[in-house]
Amino acid sequence: MTFYIPQDTTALALGADAVAAALQAAGNEPVRNGSRGLFWLEPLLEVETDQGRIGFGPVSAEDIPSILDALSDDASAHPLYQGEIAAIPYLASQQRLTYARSGEGDPLCLDNYRRLDGFTGLKNALALSGQQIVDQVKESGLRGRGGAAFPAGIKWQTVHGCDAAQKYIVCNADEGDSGTFADRLVMESDPYQLIEGMTIAGLAVGATQGYIYLRSEYPKAHQLLNAAIEKATVANFLGDNIQGSGKRFDLEVRLGAGAYICGEETSLLESLEGKRGMVRAKPPLPAIEGLFGKPTVVNNVLTLAAISTILAQGAAAYQNFGMGRSRGTLAIQLAGNIKRGGLIELAFGVTLRQVVEDYGQGTFSGRPIRAIQVGGPLGAFLPESQWDTPMDYEAFAAIKAMIGHGGVVVFDDTADMAAQARFAMEFCVAESCGKCTPCRIGSVRGVEVIDRIVAGENRDDNLILLHELCDTMEMGSLCAMGGMTPFPVRSALTHFGQDFGTSSQDLSGSGDH
Image 1 (cartoon, rainbow, N blue to C red):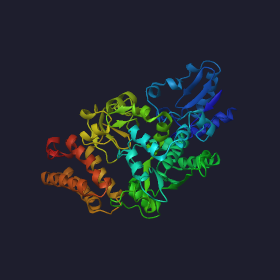
Image 2 (cartoon, rainbow, N blue to C red):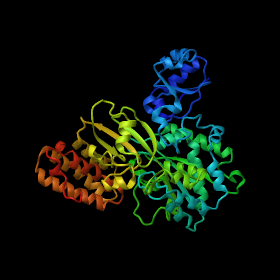
Image 3 (cartoon, rainbow, N blue to C red):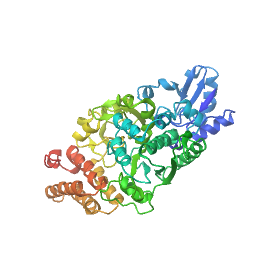
Image 4 (cartoon, rainbow, N blue to C red):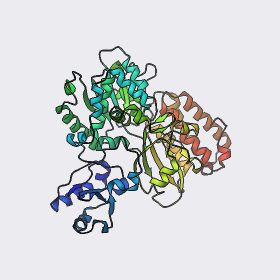
């Protein structure tokens, strides 16, 4: 029998190393795989048996003796037995493209990656011209998964069309939104997929150098990425003359500055150049004048990871998933007050209610769900009347919300939504780069005005002031930091007015909001 126990950050935080040590003490050396994203079952012990790959979870070191006894008799009789891994409903009902390999084996094993169809996309890309690769990405309908949802192929086409001796591929791995961990799971469970996608991007636009701008709070991802880059270089999937093609692509990991604003692409580029992370005015676009003033593709981890799938399976196969202008699959991350937290990969179009009720199984506290925030700390708070909205970029935009990076944070009925609205403004105070006045000053005034409303001071006048302040921030801020801070504030005012001391109708403002 072969034992598997994850080495990703979540599993480690829940005691996976102690489980591995207990297995070793019993004479069983486990394979340290990546997590499948079923965090409610972590540490998830997988066992390859004659009857297939089965699971036990959540496992502690103290459970190992009884599990080993059960394996020699009747595994299904153990209280932590989960059955065949692939048949666990939470996993079996997903459409996994980007996460198809997650959890299958040692994330640093090149042979395992290749056995699971890894580097097929790169092999196909090496037989194409740069323009043909760009055309595949455009045809797939892939849009940026970092939050802005800009068509990836259009961005690549711009960089491809630039005449420059040096171009760059920059991966935005500064995953800072609340309730998000999809990027980390790719880097810790399947790092070669990101390496492969970035290499294909380099071939597409004529870039020979790539950088992964990694969140500094991800030490495990840092370790695994550096090890994977070294192994890929030795195996000639990176560096000079990739697989005898005459093409070159080098890749480095750079640690982020520990600032939320560095998730904004121009601030990221400033930080990558060794400067303070301040937002740049656009134009010029990074695709034309990006890193060190050169044409630069800036995509997030999930966007670049999807590239290997598109080139391996074809643009049409990828586009078959999804709805409308939202093609492919979405990595949905369930967090907050949720019974079954974890990562779900599904085609665009599933409703928010299906996600939190069917997969999440409601709140961890057992109390009713009151609000759901989608898209990070700048996302709107959605009441139950909006939970049947399909997870699609345009459908969410129609209700003044956003999908963003796919983070879903659940609140039960004890949550104070006025306090959450205040936190949105307070978050902007702490994380603004300070370059533009609407964001820098508006957020400070926003905290003060919300405090006055909750305290009942000149409530009507302060409500008008808060809406006008939100207008100013939304329309006048240099980037989405200040421009989207009004989203959670307005949604809380509109749908949870009683928490501000009056009715929602009084708080909703004009029809424009």
